[in-house]
Length: 116
View 1: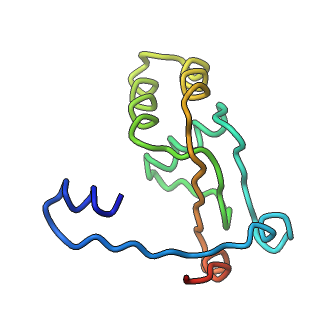
View 2: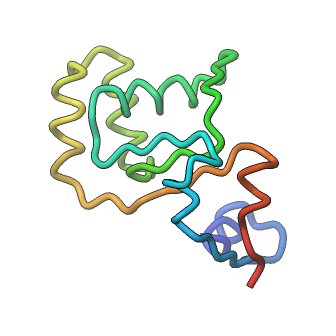
């Protein structure tokens, strides 16, 4: 992704920083965690609220769920333009092979990462 970004923008040098994370922290109760196992209406609305950046605050230290890549962004745009319903959006995304994405949104969450 870093190399792709540099190619697209024509600027910078690609840098990738790797971290380890003990997933036991997700279940230990020390972090406020939200996990979306698969695309759902709740997940889609959560992603949309984050993308709109209109003072959306969720209060989670860590959010784990299907990655919202460019293909997902296209489907979200179709939903926002009222070309498809929320149910159709979720159905279309359910059939896509989506990797998992981890969001570490607080100092407490980031403190659980170990630089490799």
